[in-house]
Length: 166
Image 1 (cartoon, one colour):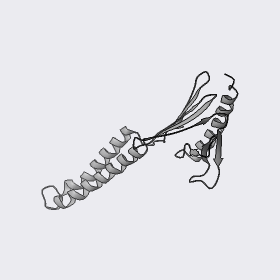
Image 2 (tube, rainbow, N blue to C red; image 1 turned 60 degrees about the vertical axis):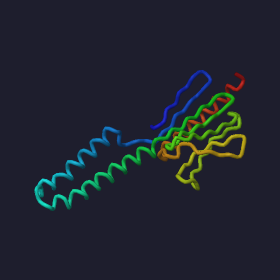
Image 3 (tube, helix red, strand yellow; image 1 turned 135 degrees about the horizontal axis):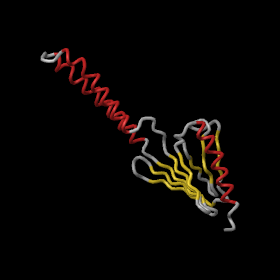
Image 4 (tube, rainbow, N blue to C red; image 1 turned 90 degrees about the vertical axis):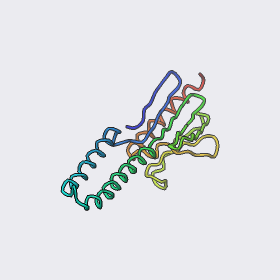
């Protein structure tokens, strides 16, 4: 699953990131294989003016593939960090653009809510604190992962509340 729990004495931390089905090494291999396969038809037209007619289209196709993969990697370069202590819950989202969004609340008032319908994705997870603000968490996870995370988050909040006297 594309998230990881870290538990210390009275502190629980969660890191959530988007799943990447193609690692960087696979990206390089796909580009190399595509370049090789696209250059095979050029062997038949070497030394003819047709080569210069085909070459820009092959370069354009490779450039578009490179741009698409690079954009996907850049857009998926985000991280959500949740810290739960007996007194405080804090969610920090590191966006691909570099800006950071932060939300915090008293752990006693914090609630994890799952919206089975009506959200941007099925089984949409949100956190609500003592104020009116509600924030999303793990929107990029799969539906099954969000359902699992909902149970784990609820348990982590319950455990934190049981240690409030500390």
